[in-house]
Structure formats: structure tokens, C-alpha cells
Length: 271
Length: 251
Image 1 (cartoon, one colour):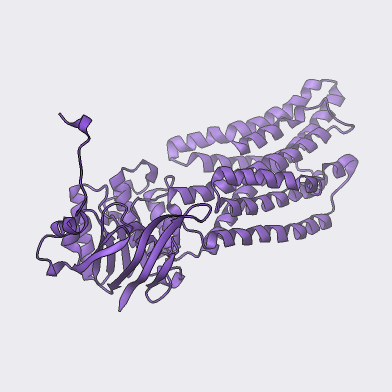
Image 2 (cartoon, rainbow over the protein chains, first blue to last red; image 1 turned 90 degrees about the vertical axis):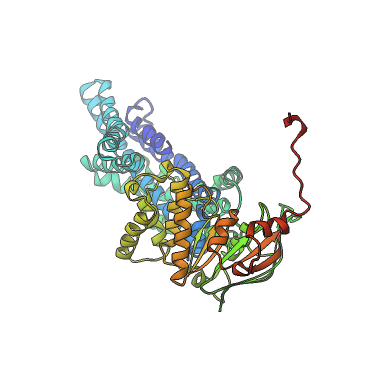
């Protein structure tokens, strides 16, 4: 649902032509990056807390720990798995947002040329159909006739179609500006995932989520370091060196929360 | 050589403020020798499952020491040599039977080819070959139980820990499990099991211990019993317990 929400937000962006702020694609770009940040943070919390708690509460954790799996190994493998799932989400939404920005520029140019403002809705419609409607429909057909699993198939098809849409009218100039800003947004999500995992092995889902809410409030002043949409205004860019520095600054936080999680998980009784 | 050794083991559960709430196991001494089938018997809430979870390293004992193959229970080298069937069949509902066994084969670090061959053999053994590609969430309790048993065996363990292995199984499947336990024991596997079905335990166990309120009240060899295990158990555990039907249910 979170993926669909983010994709839906991103797909309607080319239609938002009444708020251009001096640039035909400004609104699409700002909103695309916002969707990636806000929905991405929600995704990182829920999609981390749930798998850990489900393993603990359903008892499958007992079976895994009774086998020759070390507790730190289990904790970190699961964290790597949820991070991979988040990356699929982030890449899909980034591709859709990139296409939306492209579509907004194209629609703006068409509308200016023909004087027909309805031309701007075309890219939105095409995007919505390709990333929101086609994947579930195709996945349902594959599930019905070939017994493919619905959710993984729909997720995979969303990724493929979103990447295809982004490649269809690929603009290296736009990608060079947009991608660093999008990659930056992965870092706070990585910190959130490590923290959510640490809390989830110790406290029930509601308490762990509430703690993440507190962490979100504490992080708010620093989120501006990651959300740099303003830097892209009027042809601006975010240098990759800044992205590298942000990654370096993020790593200790991820490591600290991962170590906290391992510590909380190591000696805990699970029955 | 003893595969499992418990010396003065105790477990006290505590609440959030670390106040003791339940003393589940109290000063338990136990030794299970290599190659024997050992029955840990006791009424509900006697501490059997807690003891097993301490042996598996899932719970840390509050007192005493536990050794598994001469190592602490949380040592990976020790756990690599055991298979575990919990009291309830904890399985991932979205995985198929085949994927479930593949997952546990992965946890046992089995090579892919070995895992594939063992998966097919075990599914055949527990009678689930026909539903190998069905998600486990749709399985009946008995089917899930048989799959959990197959999961416990996929690593070809030296020690098999079975917590209520026949719970939820029909009489035919129960008989099959008993035959399986006897076959595995004949092959040299050490087996520790808990059961409420004392006649079943009597059929398969070499030795037994009876626990009540977390403490051992009796231990012995099944072959040395002069009465049935059921009578012996009732004499040891049922003493002093009364069951009065509520007045409103009478008449």
C-alpha cells in the first residue's frame, strides 16, 4: 500500500501545472522527492518493524535460532533483507518521479506550444496506467494462469515498468541533477531501518513504532541536510561529493543502531 | 558420553521491573546419553517446554549450567548437531512445503543438491509430496506438524528434540511418528521428547524423567517399570489433585 501511495503521488505530478514556481517541472520534482522522503521513511519503519515482530510473535524465530544461526547473523541478515526491499521501493519511486519530472517538462512545452493546457494531462495518464494499473493487472493474470505470487510479481513489474518509463525518454542532464538528490534520501531511511530493527527486537510493534515517531521528531532538524530539492532550482545540482560525505556521516549512525540491535537481541529470551 | 547435561538448572521469569513472576524450573538435574530415547514427562505447566527452550539456548537459565555436546547451548557448533520440533508448528505461511524445507536446509548450510534430494525424500516420508507446492498457510494442523517434523530432520541431526511430537496428529500419523522415532533411534540418533501421551512415550522411550512444578519427581528406565508408566505418572503427579465438577454442570 505504501508503494502504491508513493507511486500514485508521483504519477499525478505532471498534472500539477498550476504551481510551477517559475519552472515547469519544479512542482513535480519537489513533490517527487517529498514522496520519496516521507513515504520512504514510513516504509522504512513499517517494513522493518513488521518482519522482525512477525518472526518473534509467530515463533518462526525459535526455529531459526534453534538451528545453527547466530543471533547477530540473523539480525543483520534480516536487516539486509529489509534494506534490499526498501531499495526496490526507492528505485521504483525514483524512476517514476524522474519520469514525472520529464513528463511535466514535456507537457509544459507542449502546452506552451499548442496553447492547450489539457496536453499536460497526457504524461500523467500514461504514467498512472503504466506503473499503477498495469502491474497489478498483469500480476493478477500471472497469478490466475501461472500461479505466480501476486505481491512479488506486481512489485517486480512496477520496478520494470517504472525503469522502462524512465529509460523511454531518458534525459542525462535531468538524471544528473535528480539522482544525487534522490540517493541522499536513502540515507535517513537506512538510519531509520537500523533503529526500527533495534527497537523491534526488544519491544512490541506499537511501542517500537512509537519510539520511531520520537526519533523522527528528533531527526526533523537534520532532515534538511538530506532533502535538497531547493538546490536543484533553476538548473542547480547536488554534487556527488556531498552525497559521499552524507553517506560517511550516515554510516556511524547505522552502525550504532545495528550494534544496539545486536546487543538487545543477543541475550533476550524468546519463548 | 552425555549429549545433554543439566546441573541445578533453574528458570525464573520476571516482569518489566525484574520482579520474579513464575519459577518455571527449579534445580533440575538431567543427563541424556548418546543414542538413547529420553522422555521428559510432566503435566501442563510443569516446565518441560521451558527446559527444552533452555537446552536450545532460546531462554537463558537463571541458575545452574547446561551443556549440549559438551558446549554451551548457544554455541553454534552445538546447535548445528540438533533438530528441533516445537510444541506448535511454527512455519512461514506464505512459503510452500518445498520452500519451507529449502529454507531450513539453508539454515543448516546444506549444499543445494543435498538440500533438494533431502527435501524430496522427506516430503515423501511425511506424505506431503502431493502438496509440495502449496502454501503452508492452507495446511491442516496435522500436515503442518508433519512438515515441521521434516524441517527438524533435514539437517540429519545427531540429537533430535521433539516437543509433543504427536500433538494434532491422527492415530495413523501418531503410529508413523512412533515408528520413525524407533527407526531413528536404531540408527544411533539421540532423541529427547516430551509427551502427554504416556502410552506412546512408554512405547518409544528408553529412559524417562517426570517433572512437576519445575522439579524432577522421578527418573528411571522404562524397562525397569513394574507398573504402567501411566499409573506411575498418576501416582507421582496426580497425588493431592482433585477435580470437582462445578455444581451448575451437575444434573
